[in-house]
Amino acid sequence: MNTVPGTVEVTYIAPRHLAGGGDPAWITVPLHRACGWSHGNDPLMPRVLLSSPDQTAFLRLEPDPGGQWWKLLHAAGRDQPAWYASFGGHTPVELIAAVTDTLTDPAPTSVPSNPYDPLAEAGWIPVDGRQAYISPDDTVRVERISASGSWHITVSVDDRPIWAARFHEHTPVQMITQFTTALADTEPLWRTDGVDRMPTLNPALVNRRFLDAPVAYVAAALEERVEALAARVPAPSANQHPSPPAPRTSPRRR
Image 1: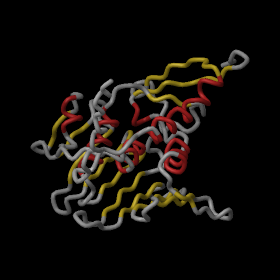
Image 2: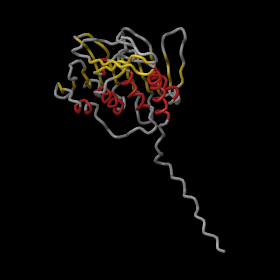
Image 3: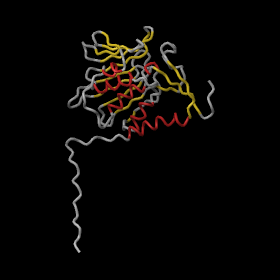
């Protein structure tokens, strides 16, 4: 398809779990620029290593045809055991970003949540006595493994594995819920790298819509994301006392 000069062809893809991986910069650039994560890249190796400012969380991106490309590890804290999560190469970066954005939020929510709730609200199908949920197109299965307590999300087309996400049993439940919320969202994802990286082009499973968008608009999307994350401000500490009001001055008598 020929594009208008000054524009780039954007493909809007639904369902989003079949949109392909997308640009890793959607995750790595905001972590570095907006959240202060440092990087230690080896120019001789096709991988990216990022670590949080307090050195408790580490993200590793390394192409691995036989395994998970993304690995997020978090050290144990005072009230939280160590945990990890991993994602296959075809996992849309927007879904992984839902996890990293929650992890780096300076004012995280402490309200308990259920990762199955967003799926149920979106009309996903419960199976095995509500121990798992399957997407309406029968390509995604989300389940909590009772034996280990870990969460498994598996995407397959015609019995061919596409991508998988794994959450350790001690992964904060809010992060898993943010992932399933992004997974169940019916809003299409957009891609500019054509259809070569899509896991399937089956029109019975994937809906594609093409649009010529201004190059500047596409280029600005990542910058806007970085600015939005950088603008997040921490919530006041529970032990932090408000500043005393300024002393009132009495009107001077004449």
